[in-house]
Length: 221
Ligand SMILES: NC(=O)c1ccc[n+]([C@@H]2O[C@H](COP(=O)([O-])OP(=O)(O)OC[C@H]3O[C@@H](n4cnc5c(N)ncnc54)[C@H](OP(=O)(O)O)[C@@H]3O)[C@@H](O)[C@H]2O)c1
Image (cartoon, rainbow, N blue to C red):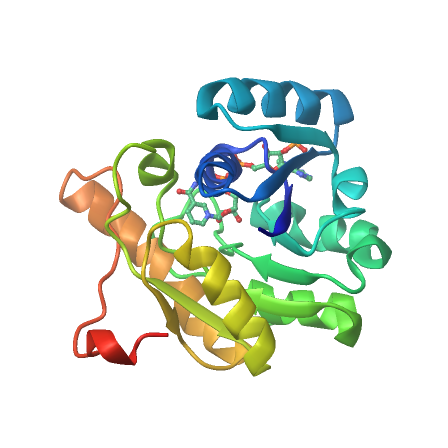
């Protein structure tokens, strides 16, 4: 059982992650800029999942976290991380941010630091063990908790322990977590999401995802 804190957990992606991890037996805390919004969201998700989920301010929920998830829009990424830098020290942070540039969300947008995750590394330094993942899992699928998620999850991080811990937790969502190498590879992972958003519109889907072929089942750990 892992103590998980979801920064921006009141949003579309955070809510589905909270539900699925709570159902998998983890201790989940939903964070918000507004502690009362975090508490209200947690109460609603607890009722829905039948599992205890707590909520509060983003900094507050980080106090007991072993693994934190950053789930805010890209335009809030830098300010959120700067404000929480000290509270995040010592945790593993999985950054799921896609650097979209509205209104052109179906076109790849490379941010100044090439990837949100690389920008996070610049802001946080080495005190936070950083991974990037979950860019291709639609919130629509996450919310549909009685159905398995039809998507592989590519996970990148610069050290093996951080990548392995992140992959183990992500596997508990019921997906195949795949080692996608160093954090720099987040440039490619983040860049694929606008393409999936394009495919959603082009093929009238609510949640295109990815499957990686050619990996033998016995080789996924
Ligand atoms: N939605 C998807 O299908 C999907 C899939 C893969 C990856 N992602 C990525 O996951 C992240 C979250 O996506 P989402 O769809 O859940 O986003 P969202 O619902 O728009 O926002 C998530 C939460 O971020 C907080 N937030 C919003 N604006 C903020 C600001 N200016 N400063 C600080 N916090 C702010 C809000 O929480 P409070 O108001 O409670 O603080 C909000 O509930 C994004 O980076 C997105 O690219 C999303």
